[in-house]
Image 1: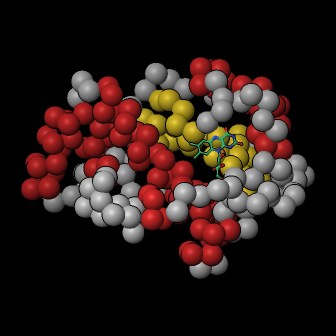
Image 2: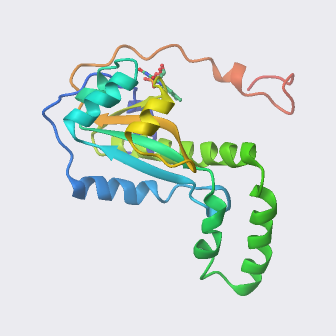
Amino acid sequence: MELSEIIKTRRSVKSYDPEKTISDAELKNLFEEVTLSPSSFNLQHWVFIAVRDLERKKKLREAAWGQEQVENCSIAILVCGHLNAGKDAPKIYAEAPQEIQEKVLPMIHNFYDGNRQLQRDEAIRSSSLAAMTLMYAATGRGWATCPIIGFNPVAVSELLELTPDYFPVMMITLGYQKNEPRPRPYRRPVSEVVRFNSLNGPGL
Ligand SMILES: Cc1cc2nc3c(=O)[nH]c(=O)nc-3n(C[C@H](O)[C@H](O)[C@H](O)COP(=O)(O)O)c2cc1C
């Protein structure tokens, strides 16, 4: 599928065929594309926890306001943000030229250290872009997805054993679409959401 077609095809799908499974090999191909997503300073502030086990998905569903797609999907993926992603910078830049390392490593240190709000914002920004890549890459392979934030983050963190440096950014269900999705909901027109030069400027 062309990218434009993928973008137009993707919907938030809530009804999946519970019999359909996704193999580790296919997941791996998918996530190899996901890891190409951009991230601030290339710190890749993400970890994905993939839950295929039915009993565990049922528990996730309980923590997700009972939303059925969390149980019926082939795999539920918790996209987690890493608050302390800056600590991986020396490893990530290990093969960069010396002058880049000398410039960027202190920059990362000064930018992130001690600023919990920024660490969180950055993790949300980068992980959300990766989540979008995941949804488009899955759509292009014939899978359906749904991003989900309707869940209790404390319960989900406990269930999936997150440590304090990690927090849930969003969940994504992935599965084989069972029913036709409802018509696409209202979108604000481009002329309203794109402004030239300032917020008060003319719309496109
Ligand atoms: C951050 C985020 C959280 C969402 N959480 C939920 C959710 O908890 N349950 C759900 O059914 N849909 C959820 N959605 C899907 C939206 O309702 C959906 O994207 C929107 O209605 C537009 O529909 P479309 O994605 O099919 O174009 C979420 C979407 C986003 C981006």
